[in-house]
Image 1 (tube, protein in one colour):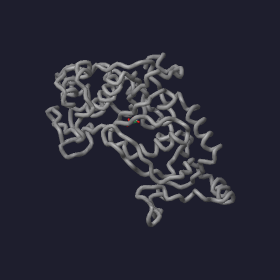
Image 2: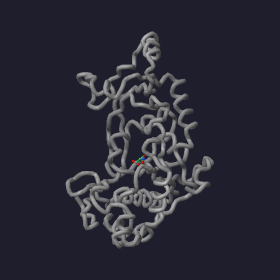
Image 3: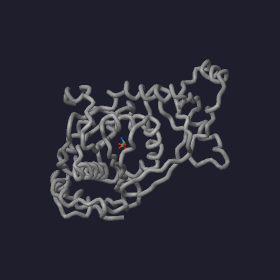
Image 4: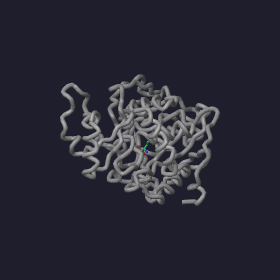
Length: 316
Ligand code: GLU
């Protein structure tokens, strides 16, 4: 990775707001990821916003700098550009920890000693929402906490949520109401959790528009609620349809030639791949720039796109 991309960027909040693409560097971007990036770019540029890239590399088991470099090269190869330096999330840890401290000082966190298995086994409250943390550690006494600490269990830090649901407005899904539980803010190993980091980074980096895959829509009420607790403005959201394979499953490496490198190896050019992606949005355009003139979020299909092994995408 270029040395300068690792420098700590200055906090720069653009006047007209900004959109972003925030890949996890755990594998090469496939056509679905590239299409999401294209949409994030179109949403930002078509509304006069800047566009930034943040590499979400907090999960050190999954993240690799060489993959991030390839992701950036692929984005550029299909004709996307971005403003300012690429930001590496791992360089913002002090900001994430500062936010956790603010929440803790306000009495909005608690330590949780549950293992993943215990959480799965614990029956959620009879009428509690499905998939919610059951609150096992929420009301531990000081003595109970000390006993668990003494047993050497690493504690995660959870949000003490005052709500069980929160509503967000999404450009594509409209009004979406979803679960907010006592979600993890800091993992047992001390790493900031995704839901915390994304909220802090989007706000502090001036990203007021969040365009990403609609698999993340269910996490969004948690993030929007957390933003309000931290005193941040809630961004404008657009959760875009994923690309699926013919079995209706999320596109993956096993589906064939799904990355730009695969497509180039099969004899296509980056320009042709960009054209397939822009056409998949229903615009007759062969480059992102051309698509920008014709982009209308109102006409964007809400259904997933199906990847055919031929490489063509069709509406699901
Ligand atoms: N890093 C996440 C991913 O690659 C995206 C997070 C986001 O856009 O908020 O799935």
